[in-house]
Image 1: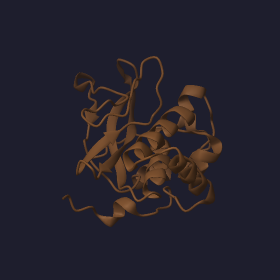
Image 2 (image 1 turned 45 degrees about the vertical axis):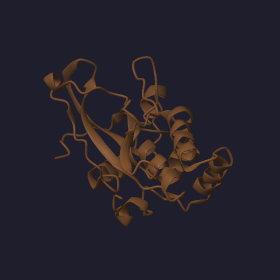
Image 3 (image 1 turned 45 degrees about the horizontal axis):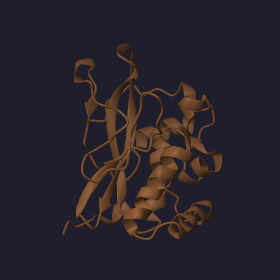
Length: 196
C-alpha cells in the first residue's frame, strides 16, 4: 500500500474545501455517486464540463480559490485544478497538481509559453496515482476520465520545447498563486518561467 502524505488531503488557501459552497457541492456529488470511484468521476466531469475555462469564454474574471471558481463558474486550468482537488479532498480523496509547459499558441513557440495544471488523484481501489485533466473540452481538446491510460487535454510536442513534468505536488505552486493574486484580467496572465 502506498503511503500518502497528509498534505494531499490538507486544506490550503486555494483549496478551501471547508467553504460552504464547496461543501454543498460535495453533498450533491455524493448523492449521485454509489462508490468512491464514481464520486471521483462525477467530480472530475463536473469541473471539466460545468466550469468554463476562462480563455474559452473570454471571461476576464480572476478566480483564485476553489470556492471562487465554483461561485464564478469559470477559471483557468490552475484554479479548475484547485476546485477538483477541493471536491476530492473534502471527501477524503488524496489529490494534487501536475504541470506541463506548453506553447501559448498552437504550433507556434514564438508566442511564448504557459504553465498548464492538471490533477493527480490517488485511487485507493487500485493503490495508484492517476492524472486527470479537467481543463475543459473543446474542438481540439478531448480529455476524459480513464483509469488505464491518461487522456489529457494536451499532447506534448517536444520539438516546440514543451515539457510534461509528470510531477505530483500537494498545492498550487506559489508563483502561480502570486500571479493570480496580482492579476486584474485573467486573459492577460503570462508565465515566463519553467516549473523546474
